[in-house]
Length: 447
Ligand code: MN
Image (tube, rainbow, N blue to C red; front, side, top):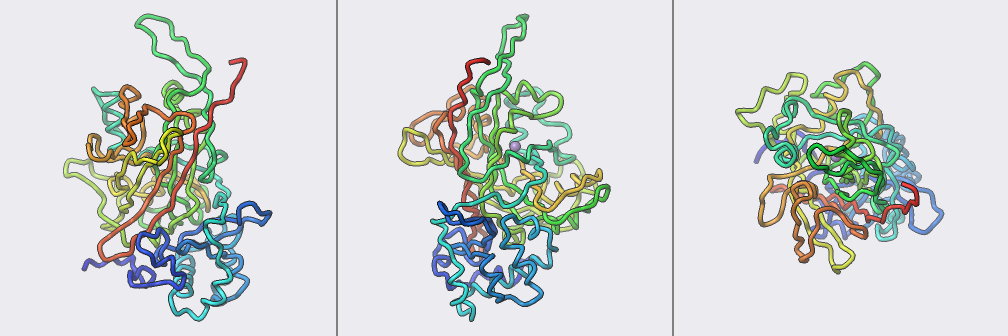
């Protein structure tokens, strides 16, 4: 038995809930998980409010807060967990958030004296419509998967595939917060400026056109807890206090637009038309049983001290799956599967680096991990987290298990990401899913 100092009674694999669907093997939301979202009953004029997933139900935290079942000192955080946006919940200290989780775990456990009262606060997930969990102030998308970097480098820059700074700092660009969208939001194929390949010596002739290389990126989202004042840094060993939790994130990408516009400042219209997130945010504390070592080879450069965590298990093993439903095949098919544990940089290192220059983070901000890929070439089930890797930059067909082929996404395709964590001696927890359907581009008479 290894000692994991991050574990407590809420992670006990023997815990069962009086919400019986939470006890079914394979359920994403057993009592050991307890993720947060905002929701309302679909098709009603109810207001959005915060909820906690348990089995196939949502515990309505606005209703729970009104019951007063929690100790007095938890009153404020319980109210914030039921608000229509969770920025205030995320502003609470790690200690307070942990106390809320402990209280939720106790009152949802089999035999809780509050079971009868709380049963009236349950809403079936099948009846729910979800909202974006926070007012996202800022969104930063990172580039932390070594495999994604090297797979792309071998396609686009085979003579020199490794980005020189990659193993020294968690690379990122500042994304667009306004187009962060909840799962289920349709994604319209964007227009943009594209520079088609030309023969040597010919004049470059960019066109304004619809994206013909629409891609997804399998990422995880990191929701920021608390804030730091402008000019104040967050040390790497304190950075986990600033992680509220994680969700699934699809960074939709227009590769042909991205390729032409990104030098020298990075992605612009190639990425800013939509970023999809899953409704359920799995708390950082719920992820404790799945912690693992940070992958480092003896030949890797020394990590600079400000990015070096003391914790020996700062990485998290999260299984990340990509599924595609095409308009012509009756079922969704799996494209890939890999683990977040291969990532070179952790969320804490991203926070430490992001703030090391004095940039202020705020409660409810969103980070993307960057595309999560395994090594190229797995012939059983691919591990690459986007189509541009799988199709070698759009040059070869990706054959789906349905027999259909894709190089990039076609109109009518629905892309779904799923995630889960398993570890010997611990409960399995899941992330639910994030899904989005590709709609045709606007028709425009004048280009
Ligand atoms: Mn990305």
